[in-house]
Amino acid sequence: MRKQMEEIETAAEEKKGGKLQWFFYVILIPLLFATAMAIIIATISGVNVISKASGLAHQVTGMFGTGGNEKGEKQSGTFSETQYKSQIRSLQKQASEKDKEISKLQSELDKSQQNNLKMKQTVSDLKQQLKKAQQQQAANQKKLKEIASTYENMNPENAAAIIQKMNDQEATGILSQLSSETLANVLEKMSADKAAKYTQMLGRTGT
Image 1 (spheres, rainbow, N blue to C red):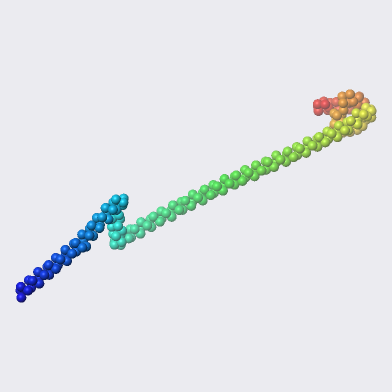
Image 2 (image 1 turned 180 degrees about the horizontal axis):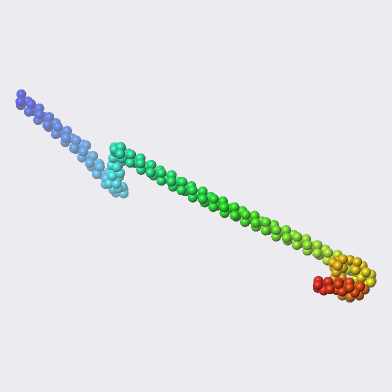
């Protein structure tokens, strides 16, 4: 009976050793070989295997970490969010100040442009007024010449009598258009005080 038990134990040990050998040759050795090949290929491809493994280990540790770590991460996340909101408020404030500055500059620019437009309009109006005045002056000058030509052909005594009844501006206007000879003859037929006054006024105008 004892011998049979020993034979059974021996058979069991042999069977156990066979399974262990099968595990080494069929599973462990091929797995180690495949892992080594994967590491070699990854290294040749430029992948940092150690860094990747460290990152993976960190993720696994984080997944199975304690509640204290989760609390710390939560606090850290809250702090970052607070900073982020603070930066947003700061940027919004700066943007608002820039908007006010831009609005102020735009207002000043609009006022300047309006002033320029008013100045241009004023210059344009003055040019129009000057043009009209010059045209009116030319028309008056032409009319005076036409009237003066009439007095040129008139008897000096009659011309003097008519001119003395005019106001000073009309009288000097006509006298200034007469030739020197006709002017002298007409002034000669006037009273001494009238002749002297008109002569003085014509001297001021450069006639």
